[in-house]
Length: 132
Image (tube, rainbow, N blue to C red; front, side):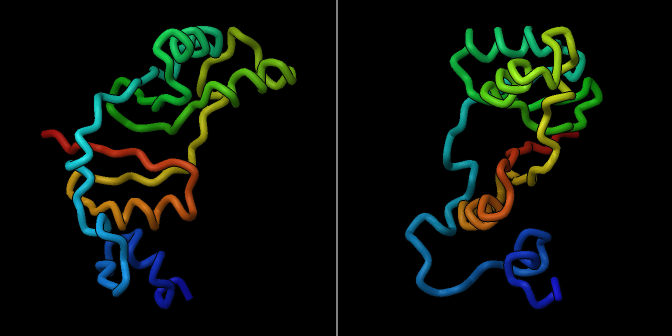
C-alpha cells in the first residue's frame, strides 16, 4: 500500500511532487533559505549541560550528532526540562535519554515542497550537507 501513497513515494525519492496548485515556494530549493549553522550536541553531553547550552544560545532544539557524524536525533529544551522535572531522567544523564530519534533528512538540493510533505508526518526534519 505504501507504493500507492504519494507522500511515501516523495519522502523516499521515488516520485517528484509535481502536483498542480502548489504554493509559489513549493519548488524552491532548501539551500535558498540561507540557514545558519545548526547547534549540535554530542551524545555524551549531560542533560544539565544541554539545558544550559540551549538556554545560553537561545535555541529550543539541537541536533545530537556522534563524533563520527552520525545523526542520532533531536533534543528539545522543553522535553529535557519536563523529563528532569518528572523524574524520568537525572541532570547527569546523557542527552541521548531525551533525544527524539524519529526524523527525516533533507538535503540542500531538496525542494521546500518535499520538506513540507515530510513535516506533515515527522516532528523534525534535519537538513544535511553531504561532505566527502
